[in-house]
Amino acid sequence: MATDGRPDRTAAAGRRQQARRLPRAERREQILAAATRAFARAGFAATGLDDVAAEAGVTHVIVYRHFASKADLYRAVLDRACTRLADTVGTDDFDDSSIPAMLRAAADDPDGFRLLFRHAAREPEFRDVTDALRAASTEVTDRHLADSIPEGPWRDWAAQLAPTMALEAVIAWLDAGQPDADGAAARVERAVHGVIDAARTDGR
Image (cartoon, rainbow, N blue to C red; front, side, top):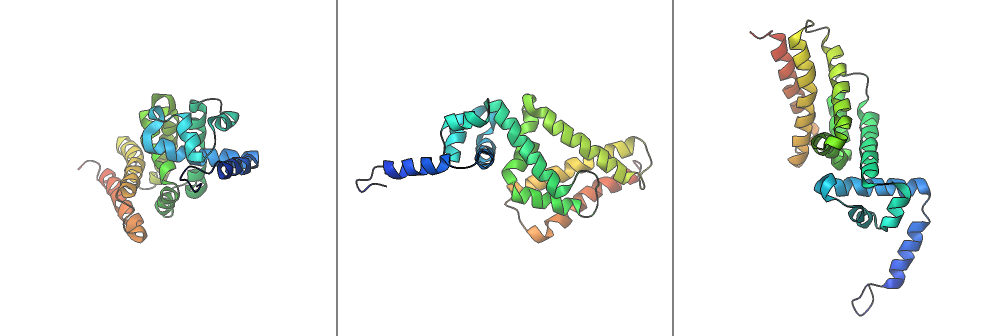
């Protein structure tokens, strides 16, 4: 800040010059992280590339060098969130470590988690991302339930509802301020097992 209260243009120019020196991969990651925050605050429709550029501390021209459009950027943000989630939770099995891992993933990247499972689900252009995640979760859960619930409509019901319950429970936990982080997994697990136990009663 200049002594007369106006922005120090020399310092600002220096920051821009320093920003230009970032390697391309680092710049892309910086923009994706900023876009995740910006889109999580206001959603896809209400967030412009200028908003993302401001969040990242770059010009919109720099954003356009990496992403052809806002839709291209948003899909890249969702892909990044999917990759981070998969790296933490895994994609092939459901076991005792799955829910604690999901909570860790959500706590590490709450904006990305909300974008995947709250915002994208409401946006027709990007709903395919959420649908694919939910379909994969249902398939993994169905395999997990095969030894305890006979094949049929109640297992189908539990296979769809249990991961939905887990996801909604984690989002609600984020919204509540991440209370009792050490005990949260046990609480979410009880909610999920309530669904599984209900399916085991075969409707009686």
